[in-house]
Image (cartoon, rainbow, N blue to C red; front, side):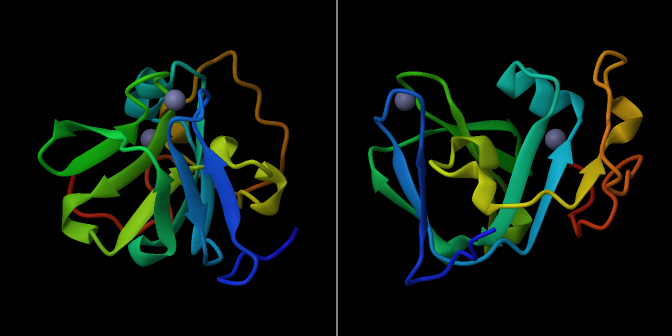
Length: 145
Ligand SMILES: [Zn+2]
Ligand SMILES: [Zn+2]
């Protein structure tokens, strides 16, 4: 895994290319989320997120649309193609999560655990040995989403 830094940034973007971003710091955490909201937003069985300081995540092209499922958090996605790009808690605006699968080189991040295993779909077979947390696990989150 190549470490991500200011001098070795990781680029990413949405399916259509209208939104591009650059990550310039190594993720503070990286995990697979099986929660119902991530599943519904992405249309997939789970979503893999990495967390970086908000200052280390830079949109370099386009303007993603923001969706507030609740006042506590916002998800950003491409208004043209629908790719899910970021998640951010209003109470933790100094951090941002981005969807690892939208990186140009997703292998540069390494998921370390699963969250919301309690909501895992029966047809998702977890075959790795990463820790599984019923809900948030080791993430520090505000009360509720
Ligand atoms: Zn797009
Ligand atoms: Zn989730």
